[in-house]
Image (cartoon, helix red, strand yellow):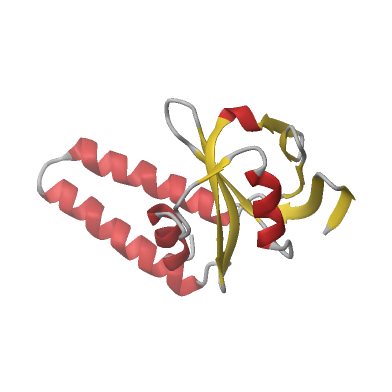
Length: 157
């Protein structure tokens, strides 16, 4: 952790949490994909079969992608993720997840799609991050990982 001023925190973090996939992970994935495509073909749903194949290729490509390490900076104006600066006014609220296997700052965007920006905290003190961001955003009552986060961590995606 680097603290450049009383109102700034800076650290290095991966873009996302990455799990190495084993041969058995890929084997199980491809077996499931073949079963789904087979079912789609048996029911004469060729569009569904094509969609499953495209989805399978996409998931395979995404699952092999390694995260880049970016510099994260929390300031009094917003958050910088590598080259991208996002002002706090673009967020509705935030929450910090601090569990033994999951430590993140989650920021829910105030846009129409309500996307969530998830920042890995690495060795950062979650309470210090919470105090700094709470000066600028309302803290949500959500304290747990989202459903999609739990699923992706459960399947090591």
